[in-house]
Amino acid sequence: MNYGISGLSIIPLRKDPSERSEMTSQLLFGEHFEVHEQFMGWCRITSAYDGYQGWVDQKMITELTDRIYQKIVGAPFAVCTDIFNLIPLNGEQNMMIVAGSTLPCWRPYKKEFSINRDVYQMTGNYMYHQPADVRKFIIQQALMYFNVPYLWGGRSPFGVDCSGLVQVIYKQAGIKIPRDTSQQVHAGTAFSFVEEAQPGDLAFFDDEEGNIIHVGIIWEKNKIIHASGKVRIDNVDQFGIFNIETKRYSHKMRVMKRIIG
Image 1 (cartoon, rainbow, N blue to C red):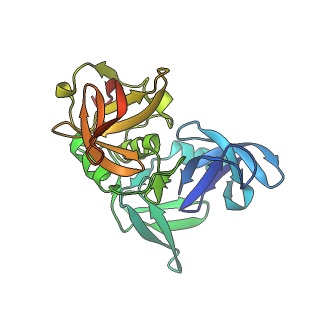
Image 2: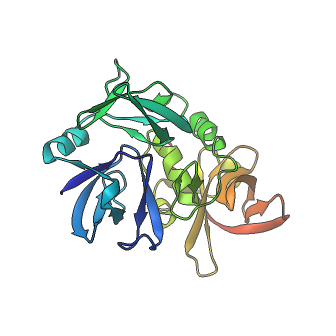
Image 3: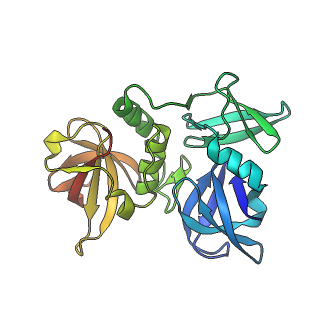
């Protein structure tokens, strides 16, 4: 097996080839990948979307031929923007997908997509081109995750971490950014003052050693949407995030970045 795709709603991506191993990320429905190694029922893969590597249970993989993989790579795709959606498969079964799922080999006039020989009809909301008002769209989608529980490695409405939230929201807006906070901080253009921030800009926070450990999406009026315990809205200023419940600063500001042109 050289290539595969997620034909399930969510597939855990693990650090080591074991169900007991740490989940470092997730593959959402329709995200394809390259398989590098097989070991005891596990596959070491690289996600085509963000280059993230890890181990996936082979039983969860939908295998792709080289020809189909290259077709998916070269074909247009759409992204699901409904938090949850049920899509019919060949008129017989339903497949649940979540926001940020990829709809490969997208046929815009038919509103359908395909994986191998399976053809899916998309009946919900999706994004095929970048929205006219990207900033408004990003905030609108981010607010849909409000109160979603924090989950290390998560990228879905069932559980999400801080960088997973940012990545999947930007994906829905047609903007590709890396998976981890330490990588995301290198994207975009830095600016100095919170007062300069526009909705959809990113703020990064560090620890005492200067390591970037947290990221959030800046909203209006010095508010930030971020995943800490759950997806929440707190105050933000030049010092960092001020938790509105504890009345204390929870994260120390490092830098703010503008990725949206």
